Amino acid sequence: MNGELSGYLHSFMEYMQVEKNFSTYTVRYYRQDLEDFFAFMSEQGIASLDEVVYPDGRLYLTKLYERQYSRASVARKISSIRSFFKFLLREHLVKENPFALLSQPKQHKRLPKFFYEDEMEQLFHACEGEDDLSARNRALLEILYATGIRVSECVNIQLQDIDFEFETIHVKGKGSKERIVLFGHFASNAVSDYMEHARKALMHGKERHPYLFVNARGGPLTENGVRYILNGIIKKAALTGKIHPHMLRHTFATHLLNHGADLRTVQDLLGHESLSSTQVYTHVTKEHLRQTYMSFHPRA
Image (cartoon, rainbow, N blue to C red):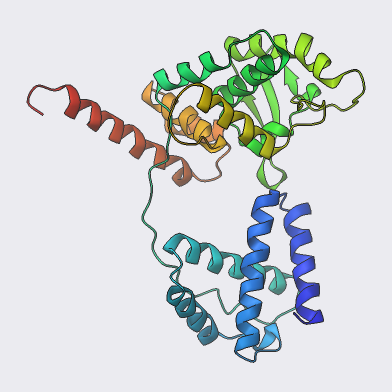
């Protein structure tokens, strides 16, 4: 990678992290996608980003399909490159965005995976215990299920962000956007118990930081730490497969809609900018209704 590409990539990564406030994982994928494209440029003898034109984008798209990437991966890679050129155009570093008109492959929409209510009860039952880590795990699971927040938002909750009187949390979301989320008395009780007893014990009187959730050594809990804890819970609950924190977000939205919540309210609670992002959950609830009908109606 030449000096120009390296400098532009560094500036874009900085923009993604600081201004857009994207997660470490998202930034890592963007970097990999762009480095792959830079390798393609080198293969084609393209020395500068200003030399990239629309046919190059079409050729790169063809190359991705030849390498048998899935539609979702191809769409993500093209989106990454398009965003990169958009940034460069905004900074007057290139004259045009050759990927602006490049059509992305249509993707098959997958219905979000979620837990049924009896499965959630199994997960909560798996968190029972008198030790400090069990109290922490209960509070973590209750907050994720009660609020539907992203794992990145969860690990960044600070003590000052929680209002027990109004049962709200001030959340810092994607793109530095902030919102207020609600939680109920189950989460309130679990978090209060954790804060009063377990959190202090886990910090061993040594750590000094404002983050709500801590690891076994008292430091702030990381996104990987949350994944590790949740997989431990699902294993203890004897449920099959692995749990991803986003499944609890999907579960939160699906259960609200199943119990009569309107789409706009769920959109606000999830922090979605577009209603179309929330509408996927209506397909989930309709599928749930269909399966229930087919299972229980005598003439289905």
